[in-house]
Image (cartoon, rainbow, N blue to C red; front, side, top):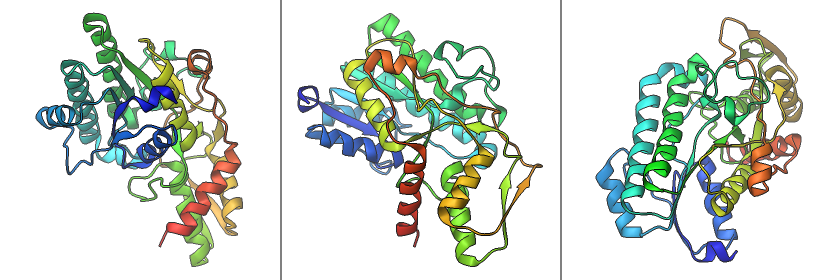
Length: 312
């Protein structure tokens, strides 16, 4: 609590899904000076805009959460945009944080940075053993480049920049737009809409055999803030729950929790994405005592309840 009472914090992406929960958690911790600039007020692709933001707010800590994100479809449709905007935002922000001598910068990366066939569970030391899964490689590589920048700046300039690798997020206030949403909100919307319409069947991409790990958004926010408080090293750190579930089992669970009574059909002509995703979360536990605490079904129920309440 004493740590946060003395901080002036900028949270990029602070109005977004993860960022809004991080801002709430900061205020709960007693942080009085929290700034969450919106893209219309500060274009993070523009170094001068970032410089003006830092000079105006004089932050002691920057949490870089802003990203251009989406599911498999969005990544396939906009690989150039996803690469350029994620890379340029991070590169310019980290450079301006260095020039302005900000005490600490926490950069949030992505599980998509891992190679397609990483041994399970994913260990941080395996980040460079291969190329990411093709459908989201441009996004993953753009984010991974920021890890290199953080490490290089620590080595040359002594900059305290740390890099975190959160697994797939879910929870209230997620993006439920089918054109750009990730798997859990997409499936929740699909099931609820089909239930309301009385649809006899719903279709899901792929075969359902791929596995994913998910972390509830408030748990992820807790992990990020614990790292900001306690972690000051160059090695990247996984932020996850340490458990995986197949997409088929996930869909069946969401069907049950949304009370959808129709059939489920799998479109095997669509890609599954990375075959498996599950993180080794040992480093986060050892370095700053983080362990995810929300049971998966509990988190799903809360996410579905939020969507049911806000979907109109």
